[in-house]
Image (cartoon, rainbow, N blue to C red; front, side, top):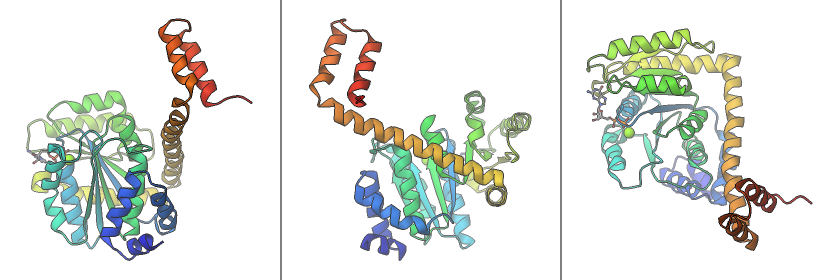
Length: 313
Ligand SMILES: Nc1nc2c(ncn2[C@@H]2O[C@H](COP(=O)(O)OP(=O)(O)O)[C@@H](O)[C@H]2O)c(=O)[nH]1
Ligand SMILES: [Mg+2]
């Protein structure tokens, strides 16, 4: 496929086109991925997650510059499923990414609109493969998803950085939601603000007493806007990379994740396709009419929809 050859030769325009095809859910795009797939698996895919305003874009920007200086070829994917293309958040990201964008070899792609067929994780995984085909060896994925999306995006990554700030006490919320554990590295950003060092210590203590794996999740203090702590973050990322490559526990975790991810994408696709098929059937409207008239109960309605979707022979 010509498009694939061009991507493999490093043509960024072709990569951008291919990512658009993937976003639109076009078969051609996924056929291209099959051809690219044998060339992937070597890049360090790093996820950066956290609440809006935590400093993810600033951190990603600084990481891109530092990795770039060290000779890395960097690609950035900014995922924001909640904002529409062209909205303030999107433009803000573009402005903040400016420094990294000026660096040669940094390819930035925003995926900032809703409703990818098959879900955001499917499109993001595809985009990461394209960037790797393009020759990127460090891929930074910034995501501000909530709950499931965040977890799914994290499954695409080799290393996940959770960014917190001392501002909102959001770390408490994260602990409660169990979201802190999806990170391999925790960053306490905005350490120029009061309470940051104490908050970082609290989280460190929490993570030490709730350790679930061999890898001890480090808590790093960062002032992203000044670039402080960014080199330590890079060192921690490299250490984690080595750990996952060398440690069988790490690699089996990744394999388990890819199965979960495939099942998550399957769920989305299966749901979408099935709904498309049954919606046009006369019986479909009939079921809801009966439900409205209270001639059937909701459980009966579910069973009837199931029968419509998966008729037993
Ligand atoms: N005081 C302070 N502000 C920061 C720091 N890092 C980022 N910011 C600011 O926090 C705001 C949100 O940052 P941004 O990177 O866009 O956050 P994102 O929404 O998580 O991507 C911006 O105004 C940044 O300039 C920091 O270390 N200290
Ligand atoms: Mg951002």
